[in-house]
Image (cartoon, rainbow over all chains, first blue to last red):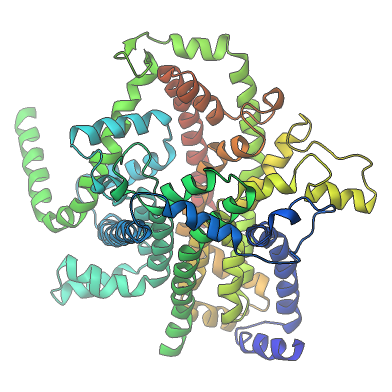
Amino acid sequence: MAQVNTAKLKASNRRAGRKIGGTVAIFIFLSILGIFMALPIYLTVVMSVKPVEELFIFPPKLYTLRPTTENYSDMFESLRQNRVPFSRYVFNSISVTLSVTLLQCVFASMAAFVLAKCKFPGSRLINSIIVISLLYQSNVIYIMQYIVMARMHLIDNPLALILPSVASPMGLFLMRQSIMQVPDAMIEAAKVDGAGLFRICWQIVMPNQKPALMTLIIFAFQAAWNIQAGSLIFQEQYKTLPTVVTQAAASGMARAGVAMAAAVFMLIPPVIVFMLAQRHVIATMAHSGIKE
Amino acid sequence: MAQAKEKRNKKGLWRSVKQNKACYLMLAPFMIFFTIFTIVPVVMSLPMGFTDFNMVQPPKYVGLSNYTTLFLSDKVFVKSIRVTLIFALFTGPISYVLCFMLAWMINELPQKLKTFFTLVFYIPSMANVYTVWQLIFSGDMNGYLNSFLLDLGLINAPVQWLTDGRYVLGVTIVVQLWISLGAGFLALRAGFQNIDPELYEAGAVEGIRTRWQELIYIVIPSMGPQMMFAAVMQIVSSFTAGTVAQNLVGFPSTDYKAHTIMTHAYDYGWVRYEMGYASAICMILFVAMFLCNKLISRLLSKYME
């Protein structure tokens, strides 16, 4: 085991001044800290497969003797009691999440590109508005947002879950910061070649922005996946998973185990997206390394 | 004369707007939705701090009275300022440095371990697991922390982590730190991946010998934008924290020991329906964050040069 690790570590030590000992030390440090970070998540998973009678064993154990899927089946059982089939919620959640993620990335990338690389009347003002809107948090905003949406007849409309989230100032800020690092010469050269801004953005700048874009996908997916219908949607057939899963976790058999099962269940898709996207982030470096 | 100049200026502005038509077109999709769902509600909420608004009757203008009440007679608010400052001072800088150092350390590892460790450190901010923290800090012997400490003989009786006024703020800070490796951390990770490998080679040629030198002379100077992003995220999350405390140590917390400004605003807004007062509270918080952001961006840009 240790030998395999050393071989792997050696491979990453191509850069100047790397001592294998230092990398191993970093690995050990991260592992110890990582155990503490992962402990609550680990406990959540363990609790979700713990049978009821084991919940009050003293002293509390870090593992379970007889794992059970009871909590999960309880959760799905109470979901099945809704008038709408479970698959409908899944469909709603997937369509909301995918449209929000896609639109957010497209809108934010284009806007970030012009705000980072073009000077035009209003560009400085918009740049500072973006940061200010991130800092301004007020619980009155939600009321005002509700009023705006009611005016637009969006209440109880499935679009209510999508439209407010497609323009994320955080996503724009993230992309802008990253695109700022693209050398101006690259864009000027493309302009000389006669490329329009739209083409420069999508064919020259964005292919180099994989790390930031993939990070944005992670944020957007995670946020969209967890959008709560709240007071925006009343019709059962438009509700999404977070709303009904929270209800299921809190209703009837309100036990810690079911809540944990719900948390684990809701965590799986974002984790999968994270892994896929993060792999692309990391591949970027290797790629540009080979190119040279 | 002056009029003519203004006319020319206007013409010039119009011309440069026209020249940049493509810019506006690419900005439009974002700006349309951003204006409708963010700018309009924000602008509508700005004057609310000067009103008495209970969500049933239309807001009534009351001048500065919300603000004078806040500072002169609301003792809990003054307390919450202290809590927020302690909280922000502890979680903000610590978690900012943690975000950066962890992202850098992960970057030093081989490819396959990178994804794994990034996930391990990021997953807490994805999960919504207050229940498990309640079990860990639970006040009876069944709490994980209590049973662990009893086992070691460090304590003789279970500690009321979540209700004892001496511990609630500390517990909240620990949990906040645990979930704080979020957006800033991932953005920094992406930033590290974006550094041109040629820079490292050039550095090696110029005599950079250790990874520490590389960090200071090559990595940090080329990470400015990501560090700015992480700073803004950190300011927001440490100043507006409130949900962690509410979910963990209850609301209101014992003796208001974990009562942040945001919790105070929640209290007045959603419990007492005094929205005017609540939005005055938020306004003060916004001013504090705005100043903090100005300060940090000045410091960072000075450092980057």
